[in-house]
Length: 309
Image 1 (cartoon, rainbow, N blue to C red):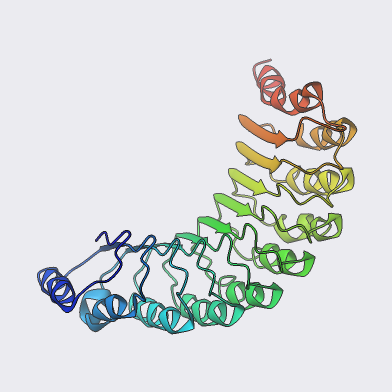
Image 2 (image 1 turned 45 degrees about the vertical axis):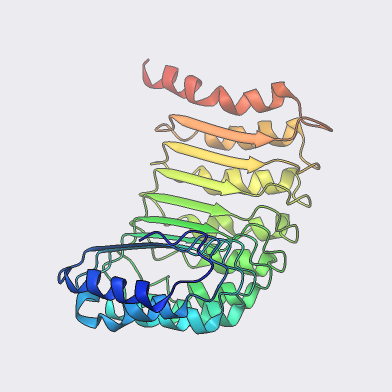
């Protein structure tokens, strides 16, 4: 159902939603788009919540709240009640980017609703530009994710959540230890400038159990306190994840990084015999050169030559 840009949804259309859902007794996929809706959307969510029996069969939920500036703890509580009924859920996509009213209290509500989703395989949460989220909010969220051992794919976006520090970053990565079946991991902290080398120090201990991981993406662009030591910490983390086939990293506008740091990180990645693709974006000014970045981009070709010997 697409409500993108709707200024107001009347009772007529709410009744139409109810009628449509009545004809879907074994609903497996629910997709709602509230992108840029300017009014509160609690009534629409309540219509979904009414269909308690239909929610039991759901296997996939995708809801886009991007740009819904006024979404608050009240709407998140309705979403939580929906998730509490969807006990067979396997895939969850929630986009709250630019939902400026979301706070850490809201994350606590949402986090508690995740802990019973024991069949979940894919989790994609986007809180980009939710600037009231802090370290405590991340702790609330992930302490209920860490026991979902069925998870295979996780994508978490916290870009421009500027109150997030090293502590919050460690809450996220520390929650991964038990998720040994993960195949794909995407973490984005673009613009979280309070994250430093210290935040990356525990990355190795937090991720060393992810031996099934084949794809890893880390976005730290504009985290301009990160230095070559941070790159070394990332390299030490990834060197033991031997199943990795694909790595993407973004350090754009991290002006303290140098060619020497890139070369040092690449020496750790030479242990990854399965690596087929690597992409790392750096700013081309200051101490980074094209030659420095090419050290990484050439790495998969060098490993392929080794494999073919």
